[in-house]
Amino acid sequence: MLEKDIVLVVDDSATARNAIINVLRDRLYCKEIHEAADGKEALRMLKQHPEIDWIFCDWEMPVMAGDELLAAVRKDPQTAHLPFIMITSKGDRDSLVTAVQLGVTSFVIKPFTAKKLVEKVFLARGRMERRNAERIKASRGQKAQLKFANKQPVDSDMIDISLSGLLTMCNHEEVRDITIFDRMEVKVYMPHTEEEILLPCQVIRLEADPAHPSRVEEIRIATRFMPMEGTVRTQLVDYIEATRRIANREEKAVS
Image 1 (cartoon, rainbow, N blue to C red):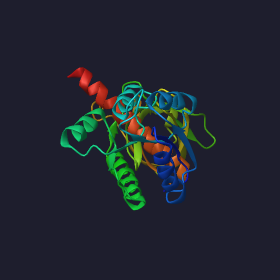
Image 2: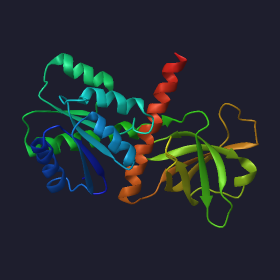
Image 3: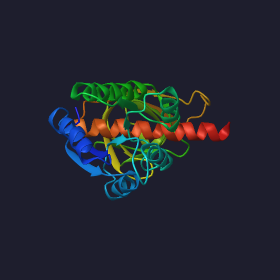
Image 4: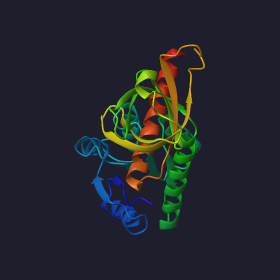
């Protein structure tokens, strides 16, 4: 499940950390696990290890509690997209509402079994993938580079993206010889980190801009994603989640 993922476990109790780590290692097969004893140490770990994919965090801790760490993670553009699993004995409605408002991904209520933790991770991953299956409108200025065989890379403006494919707009002259079913790689960059992601694609539609159908200078290219390695798939999920958060912030700023 998490064979390609790097996880951060945050809890002031070494015993509790070990219990979580045992499940992550033995049941979910995590690639790498980091530990922190409080929120401030966790923030330092996130700076030192930007490759971290998941956060599992206790709520009640000294120095910086779990809800404070969650707020800081969601506020930082470089970590805002990370799935955050809150592990807590707080089962009251007010606490749950607070965590949801801060952007928690899921809860695990103490005491918990290994089976329950695994179920929560599966459900969280499933929700992320279902949510990301819908088309997310790209932010203004979000770019994608189209790389066809035997052709110079073509810069394009991303229109939207989902787990099934993406839609871009580019200069018509630069892709005049491109046809349906042509294959290519699309290069995008993770927002705020500039991590390069190469996505295998196939052209499924070429069309004029619906807003300006008589304009011949630009053309829209719709693509579907081809089968990809698990690591690339994980990068794609993270990229879509980051794009979603940026779009939500832009929408709130306008309203």
